[in-house]
Image (cartoon, rainbow, N blue to C red; front, side, top):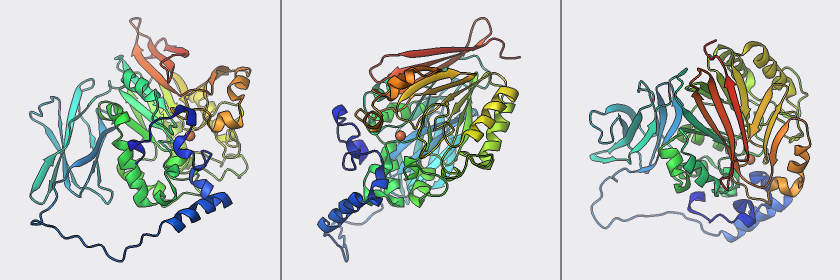
Length: 466
Ligand SMILES: [Fe+2]
């Protein structure tokens, strides 16, 4: 499994992509050299089974269930979503308490785990700012067991001036030093918007529904992210590789990119959450994406009609002083991956519609935090602010430094580019709170994998109630 190794080897770049030589993942196997690799594996793999018989030595009894992964999900109003994955099918009840000894717990019955051994809960009605403890109680026939205790802090209610810290990042081929910085930053919420360790590069025979169920179960149990997922809230979103396809869009989806994720990681395509003076939109830009070859026009979309209408409506309705749009793909008018397209290239009509709507009908301050393109950037011009902390961990040489060795250098000369780096991993840290003078403040910092903080931008909305 990816989480059990190998060690991080910075000099080797995308280590588990090395057999493919690129970051194209499964797409390689559609090429002639890729077909040769698969052929060689098939030739050397001679094991076949007609039958496997198991004979127990003692008496047979049912297995006591245990938790494989128990992690906090995205925030919801007054609570959070919670995820459990078990080793054998079990009936799951979640116990929730505001004390670590579980005195007077609330119980949420989830029924039997699904075909991927998963169960998800949404817990609400908890006091903002309190620390909440939870654990899974599992039952299988007459066997009962308790899962490990997890905790999270309920984010401040919408409009509260209380401080909240949200980290946002994307794209990690390796669990390198940036994860130590993320853990040290102790965000209340971590939004990972895509390319969660590149499941399409695990190998050709893992590209199945069962394979992805195993990959996501293992991902949630990775010790490198344990503190982030088990003491903070973890809001996840898919980009193309999580859908199992390089450059995924609505025309090339595969079954293994869909149900295992929705069962084990996040059942919603897109969602938003409030945290004090900021509201966050977590967008899906793959599932409903138009074929990139289509001409740019009013119907060409990354979001699909339903998500687009929801985004425009909820942005307009939101009273939050800060609107943070977590857009997996980039949008600033700079050279971008034109083959695949994004709001920056090939889908600009939809981007311009959104930016016009923000300028005309959305109150407060809207900013964008993006990913997908593997060099980190901050851009600010003509009212558009985009931070692109990406990748979290794809050590160079990587796809960008090999194919566009001057990407960051050239970008620094372009109007609007306030920061560019293509050598190291980054994430964005957003600290939001009210000031003594009654203003709403958001400090956005780009944190580099070595702990440096090379870029900070402070936003203030002077009178958030107006
Ligand atoms: Fe990526």
